[in-house]
Amino acid sequence: MSAKSPKTKTGKSTGQWLRRNALKAVIAAVAIAGVVLVARLPQQDREAPAAPAPPVNVTVMAVPSEDIVDTLELPAVVEPNRVVTVSAEFEGRIEQIPCKEGSEVRAGHLLIQLNADLIGPAVKIAKAQVDRDQIEYDRMKRLVDDDATSQRDLDDATTKLAISKAQFDEVAAREKRTRILAPLDGVLNDLLVEEGEYVSIGTPVAEIVETKVVKVAVEVPERDIVFFEVGRQAEVLVHTRDEDKRLEGNITFISELADHQTRSTRMEVTLANEQGLVRSGQIVLVKLTRRVLKDAVMIPLLAVIPMEEGNAVYVVNSTEAKRQMVELGIFKGDRVQIKSGLKAGDKLIIAGHGFVAPGQEVNISESK
Image (tube, rainbow, N blue to C red; front, side, top):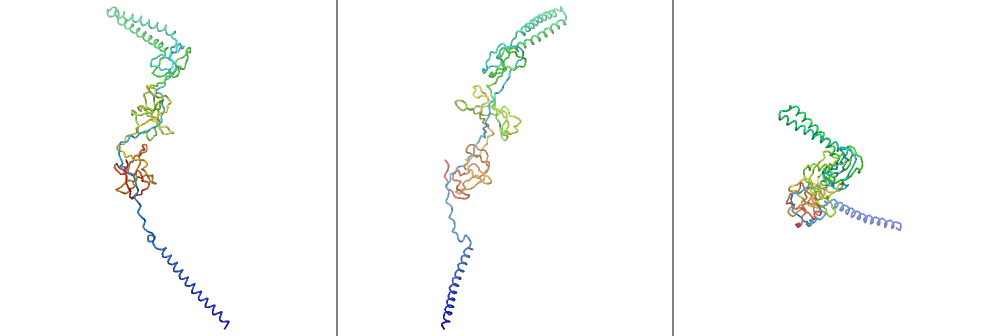
């Protein structure tokens, strides 16, 4: 009896343990099945509907249209209109140089006087021969008129007079070349000889720079040169001692050959410089008008939103924001031309557009 009693107790305890753990296993299985069922439910059934976004405060403006002058400003260099090197046309010793370097000269002014002692007597001889042949011609003409001599004698006298006049013109021209004159108005920039020197024909003696008219040389990019032609006006911005000035000039030259390295084309603007406001070598700005755009749509650049596939703006359609893709044109200060995508009168969002999305409601305030 005593040996069987512990065995019976042990079996009863084991059965109770099994019942308790089986119940726990069933509860755990039911819980897991519930979690799985909940996880398989559609997401929208488990989430609360999102609240609509509140309206965004934006500022709009009516898109204007206007005529826009498309201009281009480029740096340029002032060059003298002409630089002339004066050379001797007669040989001889320099007797006098009446002008000084840096002085202004007029066309025909005496620059250098060469010694004329050797050519002077030849001029007098030639003049005397002309006078003698003229007397002989007049005498022969009277005789022919009176039928006192033949026409042949008059023809001979005519020929001798013509030859003597030609000889006189030759020696007179040679004497004239002993006076080296300024060929143009300008500044005597450099004297290349001194008094007492002997010069030969072709020896450079002076350099004259024309300063009353200057050239402004500008290199125009290849994409812009097609807009310009000779004769059109150009504006030159010059920085002087007291203030900046704008001078009017004309395009006088456009090179047919572009620079092989920069692909730019040389263009020259001729400018009057009577007051001497610009000097050779000075850096200036040239303002060139490419074209005039009629009824162009210009908007603030800040209203444009860069996108992956272009540029966009937001306009207001009733009380909703609408995104429109646009094509940009020229830039002018803080504004940009819209070539397509906007038209005059559209209500463009110019402030707050960074916080809106297509179709979003907006609170509108008009730009002043």
